[in-house]
Image 1 (cartoon, rainbow, N blue to C red):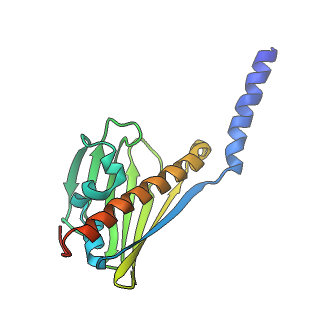
Image 2: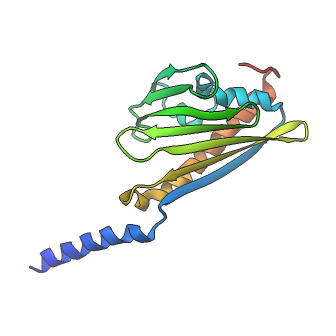
Image 3: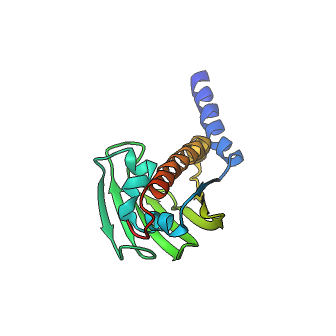
Length: 178
């Protein structure tokens, strides 16, 4: 009887704790790239370029990717299917974009959950551009236990991807398409 009571108390506590945890995650990363905004914009607005700079994509070089919609900008999308448990499978869609100003990407993770959003904003800074990525996601009730780890991982991978992007834009030819 005591064991059953103890288990019920543990279950009740586990069910109550998420009420006090953050229901969403928001992270923001920025980088200044000493190249024209269009160079970085083309890397983000064309999903076929993401394998070159996205730290998430670099985690699984064998990930299966299918592209759809227009090549660049609003309406373009790709799906990924990875054996890497940290990546799983899902779909990214460019919901909106304003050339060299902003790009909003909707991320849907298969297997449930609400979509997440990554918004990239471009601001001229000197002879280059400051890019800010704001990532937002609502966390399911029990997923709130993992929101801190998730936010830390998103910050880390976004910063890593920005370093790849900076290298490509600053060391490569200064052209508008890659």
